[in-house]
Amino acid sequence: MRCPFCNHDDTQVKDSRPAEDGAAIRRRRQCPACAARFTTFERVQLRELTVMKKSGRRAPFDRDKMTRSVMLACQKRNIDPDKIEQAISGIIRRLESSGDAEIESGRIGQLIMDALKNLDQVAYVRYASVYKDFREVEDFREFIKDERLGPKGEVIPPSGE
Image (cartoon, rainbow, N blue to C red):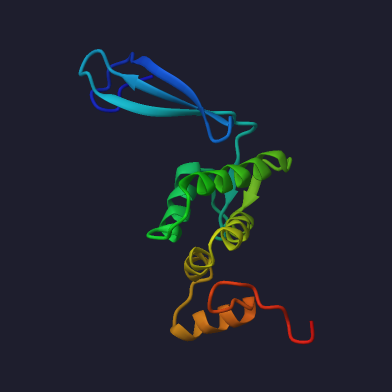
């Protein structure tokens, strides 16, 4: 593994342990050239995924990009980071095991929305505001009303139930 600080070709593993409920291995590394320490994660990748964008362009799936967008939605919320990582890993497992090498960006967005809805209502609305391109405050009101989200984040059943 190349050092991200000095680009030295070889680094030493100082510690390894399971992470993400055994779905990954966390390795603590040190560079012998500059003595910098850093962490890497090793995960099983079942297949190469390609994202089909709305514009028709194709791009390689980027776990880090998805993680950044979810973390942004969850920012300053009291959510266990392990739960966030489990949700992200679950989404990726679903994508990889679907049998499709090409995934529409809308499907990924919907899977993220489903995961966030179960994780934290505020993060769910934050993500939706970007994903669904909210332009005005009224867009938030309509979304919350349509999703039947109550003031404390609980889902309100339709009237008559």
